[in-house]
Image (tube, rainbow, N blue to C red; front, side, top):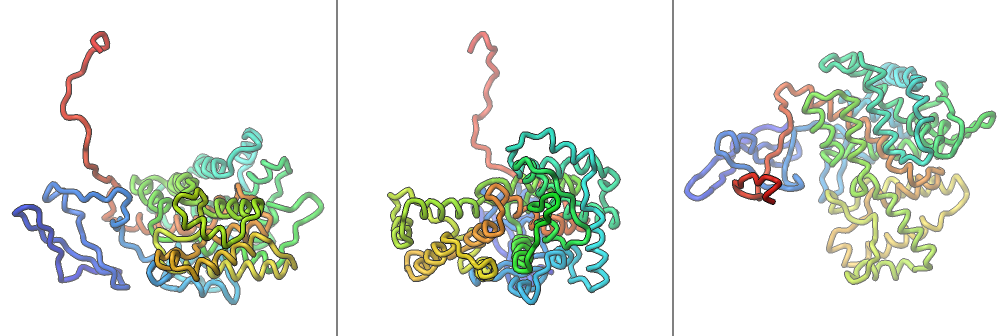
Length: 433
């Protein structure tokens, strides 16, 4: 945990000097404590996107963007790749703080299996939705409606009720996602198979048809585990901050996660890998060479945009991108095929990493650069990419919600503003306007 340092930060405004505490994280990162700045001095700080503001203390995820480091509960992200990626193990780690032993993992997995079915009332609501409904709209709406069918899990502060609510969310989210895909295709719903593992079961619900079950290969199942794991948490991003903001009002877990899905739906957050695939498809159809793409990306007068490079946090190679790049190679090797989009992506990466324009600006491949290609290889359509992201991110959202609610000193999140509107004015009756 972070601690308050003996050193102080000094803020000087006119002839007034204010001393502020400094908190130091376990990795040495420092944060100036301004939590009492308004109450004691009537001052606020101006930080429109909160890019320089720490909204909480957390023990869940650590990122060092300069060095390209991502750790869950202290464990480097690379260590979840081999020998066998296991999303459920990582979900337990994030939510409860420890890797599960065999007994704990079995119990957690059993809870997920027991809760994989949807209430028939909820399932029938899919028939009332337009077939082409956006999958993210369906996911957000259905997560909210879970509260209607599981009201007994809404009270806060009961550990057992929390576990039940958490496992329902993680388990039912994949069922909802698969059903939304089947609805868009006019296909009959495939019920979950309790004999299958989490990721394999999801792919079964997506792609099996009556009397012809989709056979999930080991490489594909491992790749899906990795996609979920690498999206499971990422510090205080937009959707995670949404969970904490909504949760700070003492909203239940279902409502908080449904709100996070809506935040993730935004193309600046969860839709980036869709843009990468669209870009690669355009490059392919237009017959552009990777060399021309690199030059076009550097030309500010050219409308071409190179998606999948650079990150708000990482100023180095995104460690998740490297893992997914290797996973893509394994999947295509197992499928005994090649995707020209992957070939184009690898060439773009090679050229960019040799170009001072990108290197000097620290524009390296991010997680979205390869995740879309990998999902495409599994047969996942692009309109489901962000839903996959949401399923993977659920354990992180739940962990963040729990950490916040375990903090008895937590207050409702209520930012301030700098008012720049009109000064006092008189109301003018409509007859005189």
